[in-house]
Length: 202
Image 1 (spheres, rainbow, N blue to C red):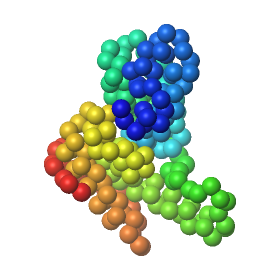
Image 2: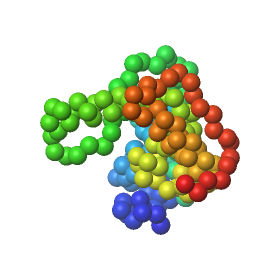
Image 3: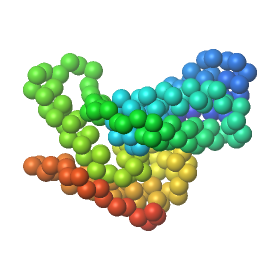
Image 4: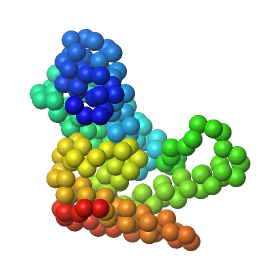
């Protein structure tokens, strides 16, 4: 049982079975468990805050409607993340992307002062602009790992790719972000390329 399952109670398979039997709270727990991951994956595809929220919400509605189609309930997360990516790609094709809000970073519970708020606002803007320069898969991996705290193995399982590929994408994504977020460095319009698979330990 993963740490997520230990915190939230029943494992995914049990929650899916209960949700199929009409237990609303079971699906609510699945939403709570994967809402941030769904947002991160959608943001990796779309690059815009509002569009990512829309795609994630649509994905949960689709998952609820199609819950009986999840044949391997123990692999619900991978099945659901596929829906998230599909809905995100559909949104790209369906409408031109709107101007989005900067990527919301985790901030403390205390109300920041004016100077601190300005610094955080500037950082959000720089990070959002830098993330756009990454490839789609690099955004997904770095958001899930560095912002959501997922392990390489969890990301590999959810995104259905080898762990070595996850490590490689994370390595190149971090390196590119360091370059783009360096002092006096403005993100350009070029995206970086990452190999499909390369073992990395960092």
